Length: 192
Image (cartoon, rainbow, N blue to C red):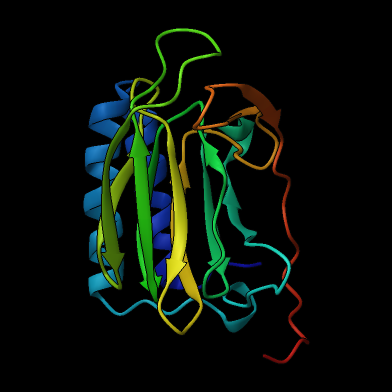
């Protein structure tokens, strides 16, 4: 997907932030402000980057920075779809483009398997709202699309999230499995 002028400006701004500091808390603070401004300005993703799948949530790459230093993703859920409990292994910022999602956070496990995860709260994120979803020290959650319409999020991660090995957690036992999510390819010719 070729970014339009507005998205190209956002990408350039995030490149500047990522290029000036390694402090993920400072990066997420600045990227959250940039993403808030993008959404407040009424930015509309191209239709092919907002199409849900009936089978699972989809990850459409909007931009992958050189060297996989960060990526920009459109993540789309049909109503009721949910992610497993997972981590990201990097920093991340999420803005809700349309719809709403319920995020359930867990404390990052300190022990090994055999211990249930400790819930750390829930939040429903609505259109236009932005959250720091993860830093490497605070990185376990699950997401569910709520409402009657698809949920579309614009996600910015500190790496190529489609190729990174990430943890999936069993919240009852703390057992960890590994996942590489991959990328979905938007179909510009498909009809909703």
